[in-house]
Amino acid sequence: EPEVTQTPSHQVTQMGQEVVLRCVPISNHLYFYWYRQILGQKVEFLVSFYNNEISEKSEIFDDQFSVERPDGSNFTLKIRSTKLEDSAMCFCASSFDRGPFNEQFFGPGTRLTVL
Amino acid sequence: DAKTTQPTSMDCAEGRAANLPCNHSTISGNEYVYWYRQIHSQGPQYIIHGLKNNETNEMASLIITEDRKSSTLILPHATLRDTAVYYCIVRVTGTASKLTFGTGTRLQVTL
Image (cartoon, rainbow over all chains, first blue to last red; front, side, top):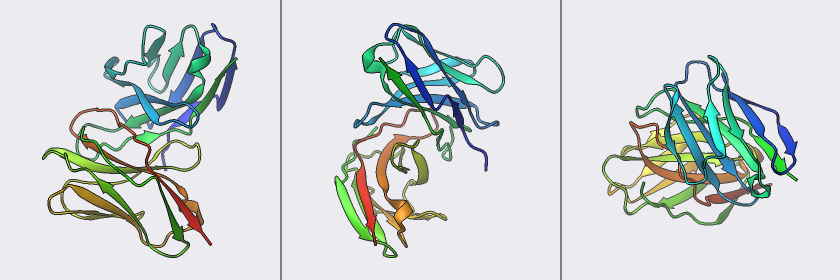
């Protein structure tokens, strides 16, 4: 069964450093998403992406964040200058279309630890 | 998207049916009810969704009341592997819209 994959599984970085989290969505999916979950808190939406541009973003997704689909398979989340409060599980998701059956499929997540 | 209300936690004996309720009294006509679950710290997993008819798939059944103000997710024969946080989410489909997760119901399946 096709699945969303994410690398690395765990990313440790120093405050102020840039990080890039990578995702490979399901191959025929067209819509891509990033969510995060700070330990003990809700899963929060960050951004959605379609047709090589951002469709929607949350207040969390400020100028420090960017997303890119550099090739036909990868979808990346970049944080330019990490803060301690960016420590979270970061989940990538993808969906096929916008219709009634557009369930989102989530990856296993990257645990981001900012020291 | 309409707000949902779920119990904080529930217990269920293994092999029994788990019935997880959700209230969405402000749901509008074009909003679907989706259920996802999150096992430990894994990525959320889609379970089922519906508009107004009851739905069943290999994982679960979804019962939506006639007025659509509430729904129940049924896991017919719960196993220990069904221990997870279950999220009821109401959203308009037809857009690449975000999922808004609440705190969900923590289901503990016990021997």
